[in-house]
Length: 288
Image (cartoon, rainbow, N blue to C red; front, side, top):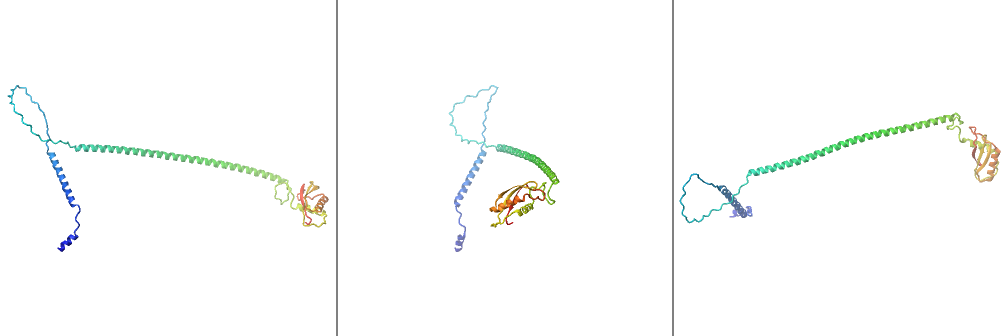
């Protein structure tokens, strides 16, 4: 008793809905059996064929005696005839399906052909555009090359013209320099290009002061070392024509002594080139 209880305790739980499943199985078998029975009965039904015939004879015959009227028999009930259903022929369905498949396939092929034609047209247009772009690039490259060559030729022509002008200017400068050197009066160490110097030499101011300073008479004591500037104009031979005080020193006695010394000098010495400037400004300081 104890072993049986243990087995029931560890046995799997009962399946839920077992009764409902059995009922559904029995019902399904009953429906299937009814369908098979009706199908076999429909196969055994005979097809009723009706026909009409008319009999006649060309030989005269005696008519049959008249029948005695008898009461009509009551009509017998005829069993109802089930309506006959003509099954659809399977060959027609197959042919119809084949026709549908054929039409569908033809339509699909037509669509594929249209798609392929469109793709080929797009490829053709793309190829034409690529070739046109290539031709445009080649034409643009040729035009750029021609333009570059033309610009280079223009630059070379402008440079050649500029070089020609520079060479001509240099030639004219050399001619003028050589013409000027033919009558130049400068010293052997002179570096100028003019025929004559436009101003006195560096030592000429000292020579002028040396010629004028001995004639200055000034004994006053002055504060500082004031400067008196005098503009002197001379003749070509150095004779002093005029003198003018352009910047007073602030000491009247010193300014007067300088002007009197210039008047007493009377003539300025010549420069190293033998000339005397026609106008020059000379500065004088009492303590120099």
